[in-house]
Image (cartoon, rainbow, N blue to C red; front, side, top):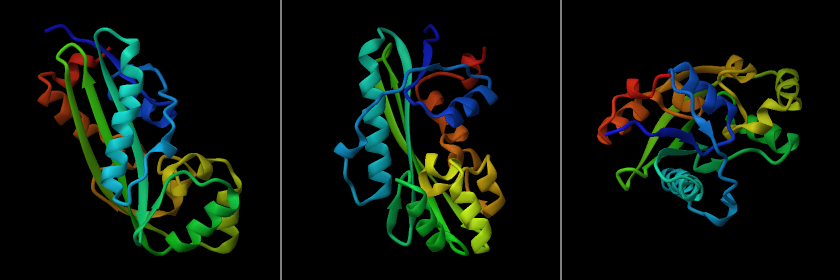
Length: 197
């Protein structure tokens, strides 16, 4: 079995950097899938469905490739948070999140066109947030980082200062679980090292 090209069906620079840090140089091909078409109250079902749609939207562009789609949301007290619409929404969410915790769900889909196989999985990581001063909170949400991420924070950026601890997979919070990716590749018959460049 030959090693297919690794396609990342996402515009996320954080996901691309995670793959690169693990030795995988993906071909980035954003899906432009309209996420508003998918509505589920269960966060695991939501992210898995979105990840699959994103990967499937890109698949017709390739004859033989391995396509990865991902999607993340943060669930806090039964509410599902994607990217905030604006600074005010980010501020209101952080007021609810601070001093508590949320569960970060990331859906992962791998489509192996050469084997006509598709895997869809979900990884969950619990994130505990710091209690913040109002000044710090306003300073953080006034930047653009909080507006670009599910849950209004980037663990690998300034938002990492306001995370007390996590339980579970660290890279999952950044947008892609590297351990889960390794397991999914193995299920398809690959070693993760096959994709090192």
